[in-house]
Amino acid sequence: MRSKKFLRAEQVALVWDAPTGLIAGVDEAGRGPLAGPVVAAAVILDDLNPIAGLADSKKLTALKRERLYDEIRAKALCCSIAQATVEEIDELNILQATLLAMRRSVEGLRLKPTKVLVDGNRLPVLDVLAEAIVKGDSKVQAISAASILAKVHRDRWCQELHAQYPQYGFDGHKGYGTAAHLKALKEHGATPWHRKSFAPVTAVLR
Image 1: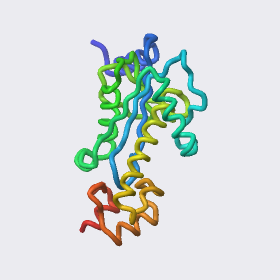
Image 2 (image 1 turned 180 degrees about the horizontal axis):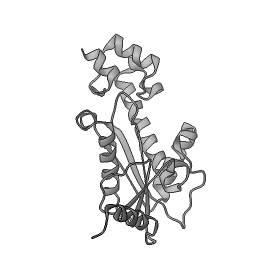
Image 3 (image 1 turned 90 degrees about the horizontal axis):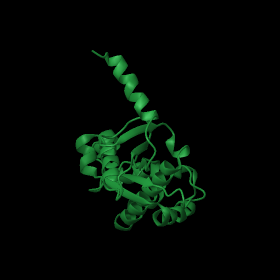
């Protein structure tokens, strides 16, 4: 009978010896903010139609991200953007909601990948071979592309929320717990889009 130790080693080896084929990169945006959904994207790039300038979305300007967003959508073999709602974040916790959004993004791909590369150190439950890569958004182009799609999609959502609730400044802080955001929370209370399970929001609901 195989030992558990041997099985773990064998599983790791399978990840590194994966067959060639379609590779999907997956990343998320919005784990840290106090409001809004967490967004994930999955991208399968076309090796015959390369995209210059792909990088970790956090290292790019907003204008560069917007330009690359359109180029990725136009040139990738396929891509998918998905999310987990505020209600799901509050019910499941932010980690499990993030993994849920990632799984949805992979399931939304028009083409089924042979392997999925996920930024970070945790993997969603998938029916395909997957590997977690720490700082993958700066190492793997498909993950970089996914990080850009997720970031731009969520930033656009924040712009729409700002139009509804300009007093909170979502166009600036994008939902993160900045001093201005915390001040607005204390003055105006929480919106329906705030994550009730996050401590600064919980505090103003008491």
